[in-house]
Image 1 (tube, rainbow, N blue to C red):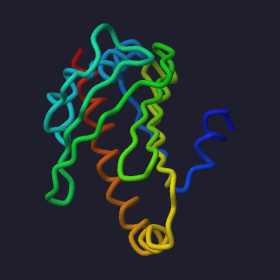
Image 2 (cartoon, rainbow, N blue to C red; image 1 turned 90 degrees about the vertical axis):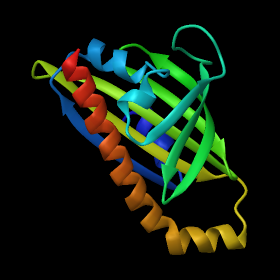
Image 3 (cartoon, rainbow, N blue to C red; image 1 turned 60 degrees about the vertical axis):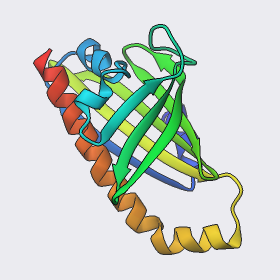
Length: 162
């Protein structure tokens, strides 16, 4: 288990998905680090508003608007770690939860194994929030898993076109 996996394992809820991409890690990195272009690449993203300027790297910030279950949510996100073209970690705070998305890229078989680990940690759990997580947590994780799998497939399709 890597140090990143150990950190993510401590989260209340996490999902890890992998997708083989028939493109080099550099091409996959080009897609995942193109924050302004992600609304065109990912069907689940409605819009991106950059908060910071400059190239993708630690400290890059943006607001991402997605629709899920008929609700539009805008979340400010930022890059907390970037090691091109091997890995990057993106963070967001929303509704009392700390969200972490980690992408790792590993060259294999003339392409790239792209793994995304997404985790949520409730920062100030209340009795109510614990109850809601117990009741809806699995359903929410299943919905997130489907959305993330779609994101990975769309990232792969875009990288394979480059």
